[in-house]
Amino acid sequence: MIRENLAQIKESIPKDVTLVAVSKTKPNADIMEAYETGHRIFGENRVQELTEKHEALPKDIKWHMIGHLQSNKVKYIAPFVSLIHGVHKFKLLKEINKQAKKVDRSIDVLIQFHIAQEDSKFGFDFEEAKTMLESDQFVELENINVRGVMGMATFTNNKEQIEDEFRTLNNYFQVFKSNFFKFNEGFNIISMGMSGDYEIAIEEGSNMIRVGSKIFGERK
Image (tube, rainbow, N blue to C red; front, side):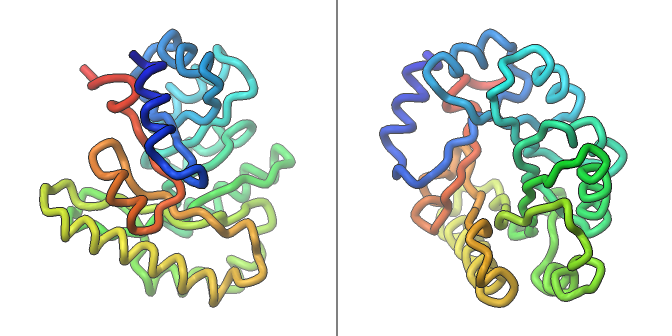
């Protein structure tokens, strides 16, 4: 089923939308089934599971850290992670820069914004992110590449609310692009949309979606 599910989703989304196959809690055999279709971008939300899978699986996989990342665990993924989605604090960004420097890398990151109504979700608000980007400390970070923004909508059946939250994130992207990253072509990612709402996210401007259960089936 994984092969068919992947093909179906890829056919249904625009060519310029990157699909992150969320493989958290899934066995390596399932990931290999997706890998054998030619898919290379996988997302994990726990550092230990991510490092174990990186060790065991083919080295051309691009691993995305999509979960809540604690500063003290950055060092374990710094040598290989392809993109960190959830940078929700300046402290975390500085730690990513520090660990990237140690392994002589520049790590791609997304700024996570809190766009949902649930307090359980993480992220900057608009003013916090603006203050960070205007600071001298931010300018000094030489081992990170801010590639764009990320956010998660409220878990609700209210389609209009979800549309509104995704629209907010797209607006943030446009403002920060024009004010801080105007001449940076690499600042080009709007990561929003998961299995339940990625179609809405794409309508509202997403060009990176994180899909798990619609590829691998429901988690136990």
